[in-house]
Image (cartoon, rainbow, N blue to C red; front, side):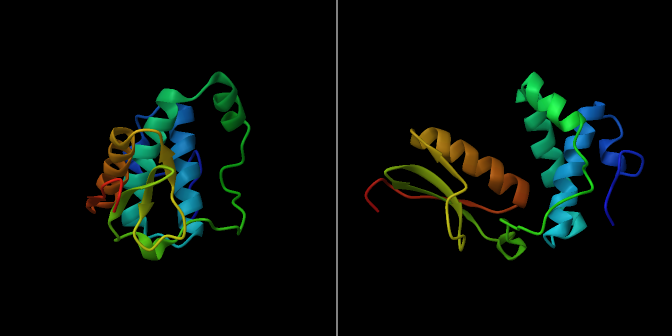
Length: 136
């Protein structure tokens, strides 16, 4: 069931309208990709809060006009990886990747930044972070 600005989880009731719209947008995309509702609500909540805090005026304006119930079938996510740990490794830059994923989700110039991001992802998923050294 796709959520709308009139029909959404109670968790988002006290969000600012655009913050709520972003949470609904993220959750609807995850629903379409096959994630379980119990998994996607905390992830969409955390990601929407983070996005809203750092969004530019242009990004807010773009979201305001977006149709949040429309999501294409081009899935870049893989719900089967939801329970997998998150790795931090070095390959030209420090990268963050869920174990089993084909490619890294993020790249950073420092290990500390990569580890911080990996912990954010792992905390959202309820998994662990595996940190590798530069040469392993």
